[in-house]
Image: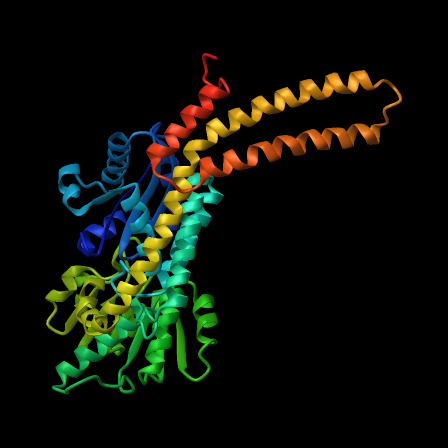
Length: 433
């Protein structure tokens, strides 16, 4: 069995490719089922975020397993295999384990050290367990990767002052507003007419950072108005007007700064929609949704500046330098966690022989116990029988303790295999015998 990961991220693919491979929550179950149907795939889990799609699997044979996953990705995205391949990466065994742990710790994120990814890895594990597509191997790997992510955040300063996608979007707005006004540095947002479309977790973070940067009032538009109202009540110091998505056009006209972050699978702001409106103000649109909420063709309008998640790199690069040295410290912790997992993984090789040995000794124990009890006669009480049986089990466990511990302890694979062969031969555990 082999652990593999196939995926793409902000490092390997532009947003127009990533959005075609974004798997919404509503499609996760069917996607997992489709992958699990492949005979080569024993366990599988999916990590889908705005900046990455990664499929972690336990496969029987590496090349066939990788081909099955890549075929699924091509079919899901409707991108031809030869066009998709340049954007994909794949890692096997030790590299796959290290990659997941780095992802969980925020070391592979667009925003180095960002914390949201850890909760997304937790969600990936929960979904795999709910739909029963993960088993003992991936569950152990995911659990240890989550532990590694927590350890990095508690034992290093990587997360200190780390920006999220939402805060980077707000800072990007400040930069662009400052540049357009000819102002050096960042400006406050108190004079901007802000519109936020979407009322999910990303929007909550957006509003938090907008408030911190001087925004005093904004319009919150969402398909479900009640959800928008509920979110607005969490910000009592801001004047937030909650509106339905059906009223979006009215507030597009009135706004100067617009953020979108919804689960829509298709853009709902495009050039045609904009052309039907009488745009009064110069609009800055910042889309942090993947798939994108704003079509690329709106950039053709002379009164609109439009940005998406790939444009956040300008902000991210300003904040990354001081955390790079801390990231090196975090890498050492991650590598230690990888060693622990790989040692556990290697020890599984001994399990079949250990089980055979234990089963063989258990058969002998029961046979000899039955012979002894039959000789004791009817005067031997039930309580005494239990004591003798417990004694026989205890002797077997004591005998097995040292060899089992040694077989499962960290050691070079060749040494373990030699020890297993000796045990198999001494106790006649081969299939033929």
